[in-house]
Image 1: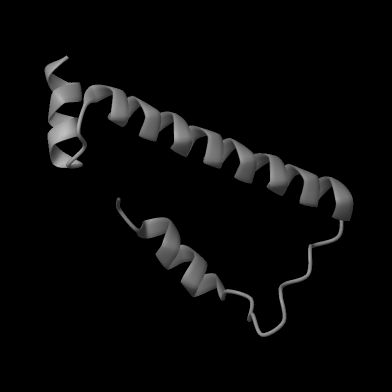
Image 2 (image 1 turned 60 degrees about the horizontal axis):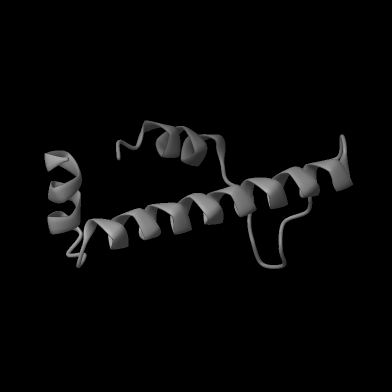
Length: 71
């Protein structure tokens, strides 16, 4: 319980209920993003999905740098 109260304090939320609602909102958003990604993969099957106009593919170095980022 103390850890949850610390989260509420650090995120400047009004209550534990607000923290739980925010957590559920984020989980639902992530689930929707995962579902959308799965639908895109299913649509394009074995072909790589096209990038939006004006977007340049990431280089191997950029992908490696992103993998090395610590949150």
